[in-house]
Amino acid sequence: MADFTENSGRAIYLSIGHGFGDNLMATAVIAGIKREFPDMRIFVFTKRRWEIFDNNPDVTACWNARVVMKKNPSLFRRAIPLTEYTYADFRNAEKPESLIDRMYNLIGIQVKERNYQPRLYLTAKELDYRKWRLQRLKRPLVAIAPSGKIATKIPNKFYEMEKWQKIAELLAKENITFIQVGDKAEGSRLAGAKDWRNLGYRKTASVLRHCDAVISHVGGMMHLATAVNVPCVTLFGGVEDPYISGYKQNLNMFIPLECSPCWLEEPCKNPICKTLLSPEKVVKETLTLIEQKN
Image (cartoon, rainbow, N blue to C red; front, side):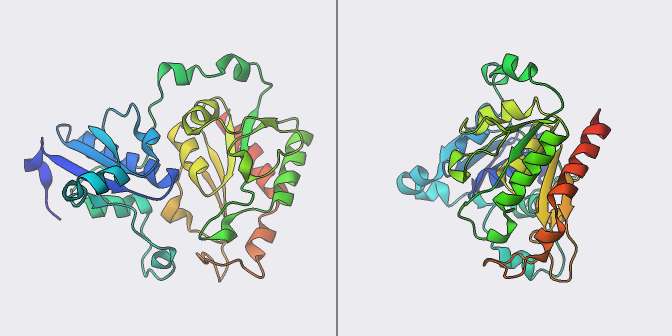
């Protein structure tokens, strides 16, 4: 791998696909590049996820990938694709590699001190979003992001809504204030949850900042919570490997079985990992995490 110290001041073009989570992971890599090469100009091409890069001082410009592909294909071809992978790549890998490390390796720039913390730069107005309402809620305050019926290539990663409802009941029993975030299309509001859904990604980030913890499956909300430094209880189950897509500072609830991580792209007929990941265990670990934080 080449040492790009001599390229300080030059430009790098990055193409980032997939969802919000992949784009947030890319912000960690961009921050790492910029910290080591402050004069490097970084240009980003993304599909519908440009709000992740709004107000980011490390990004020179962020462009709509579809528009650039049509109007300036030669420019788009200069970009390094950071998120071209399949889940089979992880299932069949001899040695696990985190997605963020994979991005660092793809860019071909030797970053000696790699950053693994996603970055989201909120404006002063965004930081102030409903602040007074959140500060008046009884503590501790937990945000939950149930999965519901979302289209995904690995459906096994979603926790059943019945178990999410049980989590809600247990949180209420422990006198924990909890808000529900995410998209209303994911399903109905859980009983006892304060409805803070459909806010958009950046306003949701501002809301999460006021929480003591977040409970989520593996996905964009996990990355968003990490970006705003709120500990996330992440329900990995036995589907994904926390080493690949998780963060050390979070509580990654992984069920080690002979068949896990499976990365299966079809529903499992006997999801033992979900059975072992009980709502009682999730709430117990959440309470422990909050106590440690305080």
